[in-house]
Image 1 (spheres, rainbow, N blue to C red):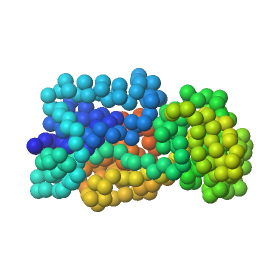
Image 2 (image 1 turned 180 degrees about the horizontal axis):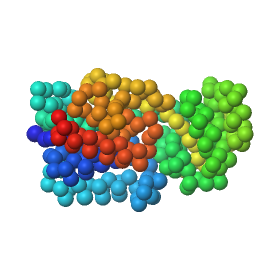
Image 3 (image 1 turned 120 degrees about the vertical axis):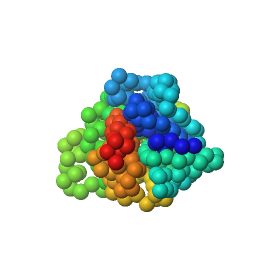
Length: 297
């Protein structure tokens, strides 16, 4: 198969990039594994005109609109290898597809490395969250917590009182410095140094956490800022990285082009701040930049 642009990843960033390119009359293939980062979320909030829609609804609508363009194609598969060629790039997939393309947009997202606490993983994206702008309003005025997993958690804990009474769980490991502690206390944050050992509740809802000393604390929402992990394709391509608060991301220029010419990166792979709106914005820029690169080679 030969296309102008291969987009790896078909969620908010990848499909937005595809829209710019097909409207620019370029042949686009999106290869998507079908496991977006937001698959655990019940709804997507804070996105203009589609506030409260489920990720599945947004994805279905996006695909129906993209399929109206004859130069769009989507395959459910996993890209396992990409290499530079004299005419662009060659990609191989797990199902045996062989794809030649002139440009690549990487938009397959990252993996969240959640703390290993019973009851936490199954509530991720519902009552255990990372973004208050995405999910905070629905938990207004309820008891909330922040589970410290790195220094970014202190920043998060200072924000959450905007939505409800907040407890910072340091896990006995992440202790704020004096100035940070004073700021948290001025925001009304309660500091709990006894580690959380279990998240409890009914199905995806939580109602309390269990501490290592046996105490049970009422809690209806828990915020976590997990470390992130990049997909193996990034290392394979040897793209230049930069350190962000939650881990390494791909370094890009203002046009979303990586250190390898012709490889653009969109969404959480290159965004230090991560939510649906930022993913859409970076996908738009990557798609336009890839299209312009054909004109101004």
